[in-house]
Length: 202
Ligand SMILES: Nc1nc2c(c(=O)[nH]1)N[C@H]1C(S)=C(S)[C@@H](COP(=O)(O)O)O[C@H]1N2
Ligand SMILES: [Mo]
Image: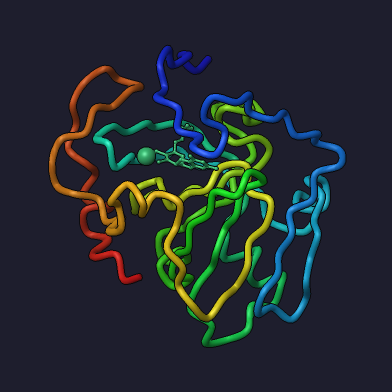
Protein backbone atom coordinates (compact mmCIF):
# COMPACT_ATOMS: atom_id res chain seq x y z
CA UNK A 1 0.00 0.00 0.00
CA UNK A 2 1.26 3.44 -0.85
CA UNK A 3 1.34 5.91 2.01
CA UNK A 4 -1.25 8.68 1.60
CA UNK A 5 0.43 12.02 1.31
CA UNK A 6 -1.20 14.41 3.73
CA UNK A 7 -0.52 17.79 2.16
CA UNK A 8 0.14 18.40 -1.49
CA UNK A 9 0.21 22.13 -2.21
CA UNK A 10 -2.42 22.30 -4.93
CA UNK A 11 -2.12 24.76 -7.75
CA UNK A 12 -5.13 25.30 -9.98
CA UNK A 13 -5.03 28.94 -10.97
CA UNK A 14 -7.97 28.96 -13.32
CA UNK A 15 -10.34 27.78 -10.58
CA UNK A 16 -9.06 29.96 -7.76
CA UNK A 17 -11.96 30.61 -5.40
CA UNK A 18 -14.27 28.39 -7.48
CA UNK A 19 -14.94 24.68 -7.23
CA UNK A 20 -12.81 22.51 -9.51
CA UNK A 21 -15.15 20.83 -12.01
CA UNK A 22 -15.47 17.06 -11.78
CA UNK A 23 -15.07 16.04 -15.42
CA UNK A 24 -17.20 13.07 -16.50
CA UNK A 25 -14.90 10.21 -17.50
CA UNK A 26 -17.32 8.64 -20.00
CA UNK A 27 -17.85 11.78 -22.09
CA UNK A 28 -14.28 13.14 -21.80
CA UNK A 29 -12.35 13.44 -25.07
CA UNK A 30 -8.73 14.53 -25.43
CA UNK A 31 -8.43 16.65 -28.56
CA UNK A 32 -5.18 16.43 -30.49
CA UNK A 33 -4.83 19.10 -33.15
CA UNK A 34 -2.66 21.70 -34.82
CA UNK A 35 -0.01 20.50 -37.26
CA UNK A 36 -0.87 16.81 -37.23
CA UNK A 37 -1.85 14.43 -40.04
CA UNK A 38 -4.75 12.99 -38.02
CA UNK A 39 -6.85 15.24 -35.82
CA UNK A 40 -8.01 13.09 -32.93
CA UNK A 41 -10.64 13.16 -30.21
CA UNK A 42 -9.79 10.28 -27.94
CA UNK A 43 -11.85 8.84 -25.13
CA UNK A 44 -9.95 7.37 -22.18
CA UNK A 45 -10.89 3.92 -23.41
CA UNK A 46 -9.48 4.63 -26.87
CA UNK A 47 -6.26 5.99 -25.39
CA UNK A 48 -5.85 2.72 -23.50
CA UNK A 49 -6.43 0.69 -26.65
CA UNK A 50 -4.29 2.73 -29.03
CA UNK A 51 -1.32 3.68 -26.84
CA UNK A 52 1.11 1.64 -24.74
CA UNK A 53 0.25 2.04 -21.05
CA UNK A 54 3.25 3.27 -19.07
CA UNK A 55 3.73 2.94 -15.33
CA UNK A 56 6.60 4.79 -13.69
CA UNK A 57 7.76 6.12 -10.34
CA UNK A 58 9.07 9.66 -10.74
CA UNK A 59 9.34 12.94 -8.87
CA UNK A 60 8.02 16.26 -10.12
CA UNK A 61 9.25 19.69 -9.09
CA UNK A 62 7.36 22.92 -8.50
CA UNK A 63 9.07 26.25 -9.11
CA UNK A 64 7.94 27.29 -5.60
CA UNK A 65 10.54 24.94 -4.12
CA UNK A 66 8.77 21.66 -3.41
CA UNK A 67 8.64 18.26 -5.06
CA UNK A 68 6.53 15.10 -5.01
CA UNK A 69 7.33 11.55 -5.99
CA UNK A 70 4.53 9.15 -6.89
CA UNK A 71 3.66 6.20 -9.07
CA UNK A 72 2.18 7.51 -12.32
CA UNK A 73 0.23 5.63 -14.98
CA UNK A 74 -0.53 6.96 -18.42
CA UNK A 75 0.97 7.37 -21.86
CA UNK A 76 4.09 8.86 -23.37
CA UNK A 77 3.51 12.15 -25.17
CA UNK A 78 5.84 10.73 -27.86
CA UNK A 79 3.45 7.83 -28.53
CA UNK A 80 0.45 10.16 -28.75
CA UNK A 81 2.28 12.41 -31.22
CA UNK A 82 3.19 9.40 -33.33
CA UNK A 83 -0.44 8.24 -33.34
CA UNK A 84 -1.59 11.70 -34.44
CA UNK A 85 1.15 11.98 -37.04
CA UNK A 86 2.76 15.19 -35.78
CA UNK A 87 4.22 16.88 -38.85
CA UNK A 88 8.02 16.89 -38.93
CA UNK A 89 9.85 20.09 -38.10
CA UNK A 90 7.05 21.65 -36.04
CA UNK A 91 8.76 22.46 -32.75
CA UNK A 92 6.14 22.94 -30.04
CA UNK A 93 3.33 21.24 -28.20
CA UNK A 94 0.76 23.41 -26.46
CA UNK A 95 -1.47 21.90 -23.78
CA UNK A 96 -4.64 23.68 -22.69
CA UNK A 97 -6.85 22.85 -19.71
CA UNK A 98 -10.64 22.92 -19.74
CA UNK A 99 -10.45 26.13 -17.70
CA UNK A 100 -7.99 27.81 -20.07
CA UNK A 101 -4.63 27.30 -18.27
CA UNK A 102 -2.01 26.58 -20.91
CA UNK A 103 1.67 26.10 -21.47
CA UNK A 104 3.88 25.35 -24.44
CA UNK A 105 6.93 23.09 -24.55
CA UNK A 106 9.48 22.01 -27.11
CA UNK A 107 8.47 18.57 -28.46
CA UNK A 108 12.12 17.47 -28.60
CA UNK A 109 12.42 18.15 -24.89
CA UNK A 110 9.14 16.35 -24.05
CA UNK A 111 10.31 13.26 -25.93
CA UNK A 112 13.79 13.32 -24.36
CA UNK A 113 12.37 13.80 -20.87
CA UNK A 114 9.78 11.00 -21.37
CA UNK A 115 6.92 13.39 -20.63
CA UNK A 116 3.59 11.69 -20.05
CA UNK A 117 -0.13 12.22 -20.18
CA UNK A 118 -1.09 10.73 -16.84
CA UNK A 119 -4.43 9.26 -15.80
CA UNK A 120 -3.53 7.60 -12.46
CA UNK A 121 -1.50 8.58 -9.41
CA UNK A 122 -0.46 5.89 -6.92
CA UNK A 123 -2.87 3.41 -8.52
CA UNK A 124 -5.93 5.68 -8.31
CA UNK A 125 -7.58 7.65 -11.11
CA UNK A 126 -6.64 11.33 -10.76
CA UNK A 127 -8.91 13.33 -8.46
CA UNK A 128 -10.24 16.70 -9.70
CA UNK A 129 -7.58 18.49 -7.58
CA UNK A 130 -4.81 16.44 -9.18
CA UNK A 131 -5.99 17.10 -12.75
CA UNK A 132 -8.74 14.61 -13.52
CA UNK A 133 -8.89 12.93 -15.95
CA UNK A 134 -5.59 13.57 -17.75
CA UNK A 135 -2.59 15.69 -16.79
CA UNK A 136 0.61 16.42 -18.61
CA UNK A 137 3.65 15.49 -16.52
CA UNK A 138 7.03 16.95 -17.42
CA UNK A 139 9.44 15.47 -14.92
CA UNK A 140 12.63 17.26 -15.94
CA UNK A 141 11.17 20.79 -15.99
CA UNK A 142 9.27 22.78 -13.39
CA UNK A 143 5.74 21.49 -13.37
CA UNK A 144 4.06 24.79 -14.27
CA UNK A 145 4.55 23.52 -17.83
CA UNK A 146 2.61 20.35 -16.92
CA UNK A 147 -1.01 21.30 -17.50
CA UNK A 148 -3.62 19.50 -15.34
CA UNK A 149 -7.09 18.55 -16.64
CA UNK A 150 -5.90 18.77 -20.24
CA UNK A 151 -8.70 19.38 -22.74
CA UNK A 152 -6.52 19.60 -25.84
CA UNK A 153 -2.98 19.47 -27.09
CA UNK A 154 -1.82 21.17 -30.28
CA UNK A 155 1.32 20.80 -32.34
CA UNK A 156 2.29 24.39 -33.13
CA UNK A 157 4.97 26.46 -34.88
CA UNK A 158 5.10 29.25 -32.33
CA UNK A 159 5.81 29.43 -28.64
CA UNK A 160 3.18 31.31 -26.64
CA UNK A 161 3.74 32.34 -23.03
CA UNK A 162 1.85 30.19 -20.54
CA UNK A 163 -0.38 31.02 -17.61
CA UNK A 164 2.49 31.28 -15.09
CA UNK A 165 4.51 33.85 -17.01
CA UNK A 166 2.47 36.66 -15.50
CA UNK A 167 3.86 35.60 -12.11
CA UNK A 168 7.39 35.94 -13.47
CA UNK A 169 8.20 32.30 -14.23
CA UNK A 170 9.55 31.70 -17.70
CA UNK A 171 12.60 29.45 -17.32
CA UNK A 172 11.32 26.02 -16.32
CA UNK A 173 14.73 24.37 -15.89
CA UNK A 174 15.06 22.84 -12.43
CA UNK A 175 17.47 24.76 -10.23
CA UNK A 176 20.23 23.15 -8.13
CA UNK A 177 19.01 23.87 -4.61
CA UNK A 178 17.11 21.72 -2.11
CA UNK A 179 13.35 21.41 -2.68
CA UNK A 180 10.92 20.28 0.03
CA UNK A 181 9.80 16.71 -0.76
CA UNK A 182 6.16 16.72 0.38
CA UNK A 183 6.06 12.91 0.32
CA UNK A 184 9.07 12.59 2.63
CA UNK A 185 8.77 15.71 4.76
CA UNK A 186 12.37 16.77 4.14
CA UNK A 187 14.46 18.96 1.88
CA UNK A 188 16.10 17.07 -0.98
CA UNK A 189 18.44 18.08 -3.78
CA UNK A 190 16.87 17.48 -7.20
CA UNK A 191 17.85 14.17 -8.83
CA UNK A 192 20.94 14.42 -11.03
CA UNK A 193 19.05 13.45 -14.21
CA UNK A 194 16.74 16.46 -13.93
CA UNK A 195 19.66 18.77 -13.16
CA UNK A 196 21.44 17.35 -16.21
CA UNK A 197 18.38 17.96 -18.40
CA UNK A 198 19.95 21.28 -19.31
CA UNK A 199 18.46 24.68 -20.08
CA UNK A 200 14.85 25.25 -20.99
CA UNK A 201 15.17 25.95 -24.71
CA UNK A 202 11.84 27.61 -25.31
N1 LIG B 1 -4.62 23.32 -15.23
C1 LIG B 1 -3.62 23.61 -14.41
N2 LIG B 1 -2.54 22.83 -14.43
C2 LIG B 1 -1.50 23.07 -13.60
C3 LIG B 1 -1.52 24.18 -12.73
C4 LIG B 1 -2.68 25.00 -12.73
O1 LIG B 1 -2.79 25.97 -11.99
N3 LIG B 1 -3.71 24.67 -13.57
N4 LIG B 1 -0.45 24.43 -11.90
C5 LIG B 1 0.84 23.79 -12.27
C6 LIG B 1 1.79 23.82 -11.19
S1 LIG B 1 2.59 25.29 -10.94
C7 LIG B 1 2.14 22.71 -10.47
S2 LIG B 1 3.39 22.71 -9.35
C8 LIG B 1 1.37 21.45 -10.60
C9 LIG B 1 0.73 21.14 -9.25
O2 LIG B 1 0.12 19.92 -9.29
P1 LIG B 1 -0.68 19.40 -7.99
O3 LIG B 1 -1.77 20.38 -7.71
O4 LIG B 1 -1.14 18.05 -8.33
O5 LIG B 1 0.31 19.40 -6.87
O6 LIG B 1 0.35 21.53 -11.58
C10 LIG B 1 0.65 22.35 -12.71
N5 LIG B 1 -0.44 22.25 -13.64
MO1 LIG C 1 4.23 24.89 -9.43
